[in-house]
Length: 403
Image 1: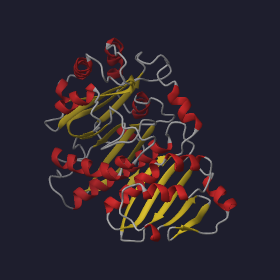
Image 2: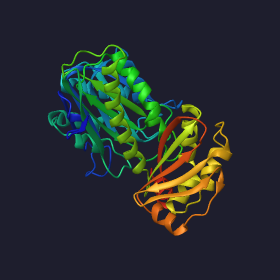
Image 3: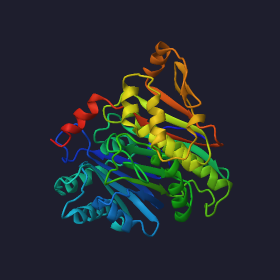
Image 4: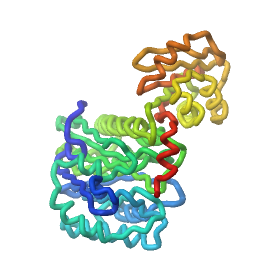
């Protein structure tokens, strides 16, 4: 496996584009994105478990029920959630996209992100789709920009891998900066691959993957209404179709996870107002569920996130978060340390504080990427979660997000 250029356009047969159509007031920001496969692709999706769901999720679920899709249309600036005519708008976006691409509306995945509960006029989308479709090409970056809201950087990646002697490629884009605490997926993530894999196995791979990738990310503890992860696999790499578990399925899952974990880190590191990417690596757990629970509890702690912003090695907040996580752990066995490019500082052993250099700890915690190491010393299971620090700017951004 190796990293390659191209993002969502790296895989054979995929093109993309992004334009400003007028949903967002700022004309310099793209607000409409399109991904297209020249051949119908196997499709797999996971969605938010928030009871309040954006209309596009309902429409997409119906469209991919047969396991296939050929295009993705997504707008930013308005989440198309809690609108009386939301379904009509989402279905209209599919119809307009299908007309421009000469495909069936039922083969379109539709997504939406932005302000919740704001009336959405389909007019700018209708006017923007023709130029959006006409500009399809190796424009994955434009598509990545078109799905951004408060994101400060576009998020994309692509890798190549081998299945049965055939080179396969997989790439992805994501948006996500705030309102991130998923319960199955996160924000909006679109992945494309030319690997030949059946819809059933593609869904199996994605559903398993999100448990160790997107389900392990938290920026602020809020689960969005429009979260969706979608993978399209058009088979144009011409490998023998993956229809069952085995070595080739495992290789595909490994490549998928390389893409998703990379995007997890990009999302967490770009959290609203964030200055640092935080990673909590839990080892020595009695089982994976325990490791997962501990890692997520630590990464979600507002007090710990604030301490990391201030480069304060307040390890007691780590123990505190573990203690209320609900995980069955022996607190007298827990070791904690902090790591960055400046080194590692041990701060807790066997559930108790130890002497350490505050000056050295400060130097480690002032870096952009910090790992919180938690050793439970009670087994062999491990888990990793990602998040960010909590800063003054998070409140500023969300205090006037709508207005």
